[in-house]
Length: 605
Image (tube, rainbow, N blue to C red; front, top):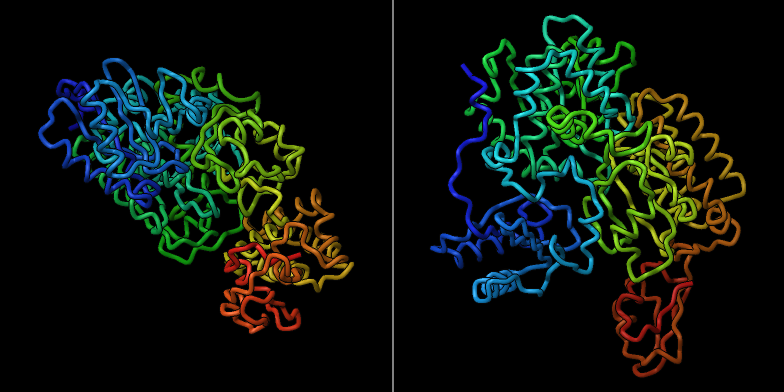
């Protein structure tokens, strides 16, 4: 039988004077962090005063691989970026010889100023509090920073009603997109009777460019497990499932280890903390269907059926998994829960706005200098994230727009990016918070092409159950294809808006209901680009290749012949050392000539 003693921090050995951490999440490993770790393990072999530690993702994806040199006794941190096995050894060797951190590759320090340190210093990390800090494969590391104290507190000191009340006071809203009150959802499930109740973690992260859930699961899996335990205690559930996409093998591996270690320490299982509360967790790997992010489709998939949405009501809190009361929260929502219960609602709702409390994690990507994972209080502006944290636009090009909410969200023009990021403010300008994707675009981005990209995604991911979604999104996609090929007509924009209204109103689930959003917002804010494509047969961003006319500037052409040799259509002619020409009738607009020209003699207008 487990006791309260089980969850207390285990005794640990004396802390070493120096700790070196290497970020070994997917992004770091892809950049070569595993080689850095192996090299340092060999180099530091036998050096007892230094601990080499595996950790997760700090969110600094733009500077991977990352290495941290820290001094626990002094509370000093030095984070290095873009390290190689050679530079990592140089950093460590320099420290060992001088006793001080070297400056090369330094990205962040909490004791003196470093250029670019704003990426971390301007964040407020609650969900990401342990990411890049602890070893995600060692439960003792999580316990060492106060992990599982919240569930112990909930079970031994609070009633289920008090737990739900604390979540209500915190103002926590679901971070999966809709922003529904977490406490209200839990109270519905608690009030409904069933022979069993379930908690499901929705880790089926499917938005293009989104990687928030993956990073948390790879870097701090126990925070999600603890959040599920607290949710289970609050609603009276005895079991839970983590529905994670199989394309996240490292997340699956670390979740599997975390669950096994929690069971070994009697933090999962029967009669937890000497109480009558029992709870177990199982993993279910999804096949990557975007529609399974929708609650009812996800439940069907967990049950072993084809994931397709159902008409609601009944809602899952009334009749969910196997017909029993079920709550479904996503990774980020659950990762907030332990902090709220342990620290209290007031420590959480001090951040954010009146109706959007706490923080929000964003996957910052696109044409931004410092892309990665960021966590900020609700209410900060888009500009603050893009410029203060992200460092601005690549090559300092003009800022054009951001896409929030992925395929279900909308494109927000730069002139509206002083808008606070919260549920209500984004809704007012036609976008949504979504799960947290934030795609930055500059002047080289074609907004018609962006709308087509997202619509193509949702159209291909439609389960096909609804005619409006299945057929309507395809028709919208065909119209966008015509426009980007220079074959659009004056009626196309009206047709897009008419189809969008029908799809939004007639679709069963959120996928179809929100699929037209990228088209509608680009039509609203960038209608002139659509008109240029249709009326002038021009793409202002020069991205729609069918609308470009390729030519060679005679004064710059040396007649080297590279463009002619590589042209797949044989559209380029000319003698050696004589300026070449392009036959526009033969040209297939592939752009190979531009890619191969070393003299910038080929242009596309």
